[in-house]
Length: 341
Image (tube, rainbow, N blue to C red; front, side, top):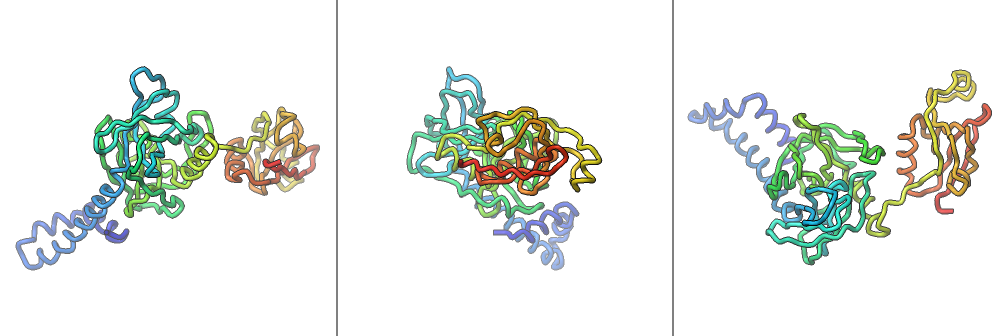
């Protein structure tokens, strides 16, 4: 299997034309000497992709709504366990009442939606079958820009279609259909088309590092995947409770400019803050002592300048206790909150 240095060398040779030059000179001893390393690199690259497809391809399924079902759409998914649990996109299954999955062998299997999380565009389904091939979720935090990735899916209904590319950026953010930001999106160059949604993005070792979720119309080389680490958390939540439990403050809020004198007096690091307009008396914010008019400027000493910051920081806490820093009557206050209480 090719290492990343071999892959980079191969791509560099393809782009600068030295592979072509080697082919031209293959009749001479010097040409043959140049050709052997190039052929070895090509073979290593091909073998890496072939190995991944053999390992992961059988775990990839197409998912469609049965006749009479409404909403949702058609897309891809991949099996996580031999007893039928599979991940796909929320927008593939959302609103569907009757669904089916087609395996690589051509079998059609009924699908049950276990849980749907539009906030991350992920959904967990279960196929009514056993002893199924499955894929391994990897660690998306270990991804590097430039790393080889492989997308497997069913674009336009073409079963088990494979495309390759590289990670082109990390840490992107996209807004889900319900308005929340999906954090740490993986941007890559593996070509995607309608129907790829919900299929796996895989590294050269056959580990799923992302769930393909979106393309930009008319753009080239711009694919996006929800990171595997997010998928692990969401899948765990959906298996245990059927929904993703998030920390909700119980407030209505807006973003305002912080007066300059307050920034100077309180040594604030942001010109913007989240102003609380209304507080749910039974909510977490009320129990923490938050009042209408408070300016939320930090969560656990992390700056809050937008409502998106607030959502992101609260989601990252995974239900652990935290401290809200607010400005009230010209003073900084620290309000402790515990979602478990």
